[in-house]
Length: 193
Image (cartoon, rainbow, N blue to C red; front, side, top):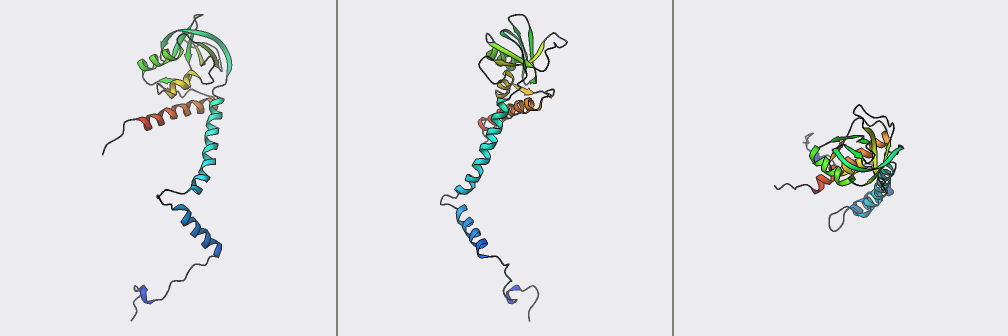
């Protein structure tokens, strides 16, 4: 007597039909993905490499166009007021646009190390002073294509502010902040189990 739950006596299961090229591809893939040391084979990475190169190129182009506003002026930095503002030789006070301080004391020290005694070019959408008389701007060190803001973000000394209205500028600043977060995760302390 044959019971419905007993599959061994029913006979062979019907095979799904597939042509010989499909079987060859499946066999080839099975052999290509296994290697002697257990890692994935080169065909996978050969497909992944062009995609990663496109991604890197896109990030680099975003950085190259980083906050490319009109020039509002130039000057030499004589003093740092706080983590987001500094004074130029001519007496103007500049507030770095697009940033929030992560730690005021560390941020002030980092900004001082970056800009004191150096020439900067100021760029921005509007050069009208804020209510405290400071000129909001993106500052670029002489000879550098990266803003002071992005350098502070890469060092982990600041966070991107929500008031950046230019999408390209915001994405490049967020990329710099993300880079700092990745570096901290990679080079941070490791957990022991």
